[in-house]
Amino acid sequence: MCPRIVTRQEWKARNVTGHQLLWTRPVPYVVIHHGGILHYCYDIKECSLIVKSYQDPHIDTNKWIDIGYNFVIGEDGNIYEGRGWDFVGAHAPGFNTQSIGISIIGDYSHSNPNKNALRALTEIIKCGVLLNKISINYQVIGHRQARITACPGEVFYNYVQSMPRWTSTPVPVYVDANNYNYSNKSNNDSSLNNKIDEKN
Ligand SMILES: [Zn+2]
Image (cartoon, rainbow, N blue to C red; front, side, top):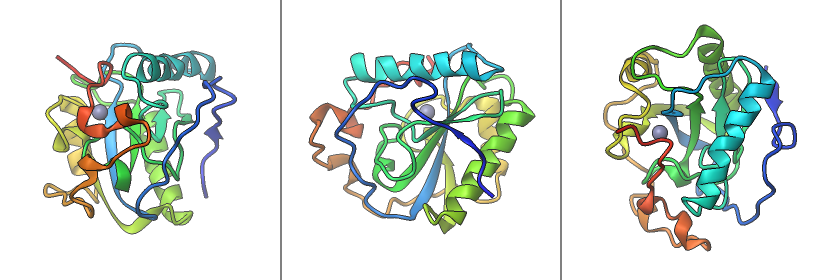
């Protein structure tokens, strides 16, 4: 059973082009993020605005083609479609081409996401396996395992480490993923400098 996913049209995403297909599908990794800002939401209207507030700087400031994440989850328990199941994201250098990146709206340095959000996280991963978008042998990592960042927040990272598929030693299938020559050069994940995701 797959949960309902709030479509890009529903959250009023900007229309963009130029997505790259993931290098390997089903993907071997799920990368967990938090939004990194003290801004939370509890209904589809509020959460849609926040998802948009992630997409805008990813495009306008970071010069990425789209919101960096594959999916975004709100504490309303909804899952919002980012780049979706099939496309390379811009969220974790070295893993973008071979992972699904999921971000929970809010800052989880000092607390965990609520149970609605954590349930949605479990469901979307389960759904990805069912749809054969995520490998049955998938492994989970936190963003901080891919680059120096506080993401997904100290407290939430403890939760991530308790997830059954968490690995302490992720090994990208494609080790040269950082050097991938994106058609949109600035989308290269080695230049990742996500101000929202960055927790100073
Ligand atoms: Zn992150």
